[in-house]
Image (cartoon, rainbow, N blue to C red):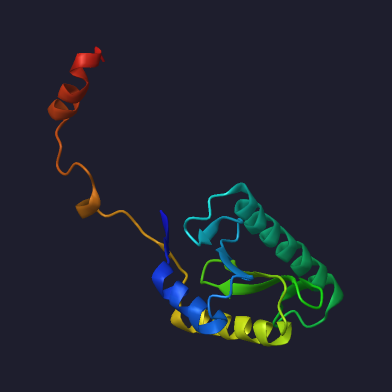
Length: 162
């Protein structure tokens, strides 16, 4: 079973540190399949679309760059913006996959500063390993029923006529 270890309060504090809770800035973390894992209350269709589209555009751009650049080890980012509004996507690498840090901003007077803060946030999250993918193998101590006998199993389903 894959488990996402994500400390929302810690990310909230980093968002405050790097963006001063600017209401014109929205921050998302999406898994490689586009599922939004931060903020946790982002179950809206609009936010789900942001995650799915960000993952899709990243993967498409990544494939395009593999065919365009001879150096495939370059550090990439995706940016689509005007002078004061836009979206930027940076990778958050784990051992198993690439996830995405997504910044959506509008009406920003200094987008260069904002993008730099976004890169610093990405570095901080990467260094802290805030988004960990781990494969958890079920051990016998975690089983719901330990040392259950066939008679006990039969007893569980006896009222169903099985």
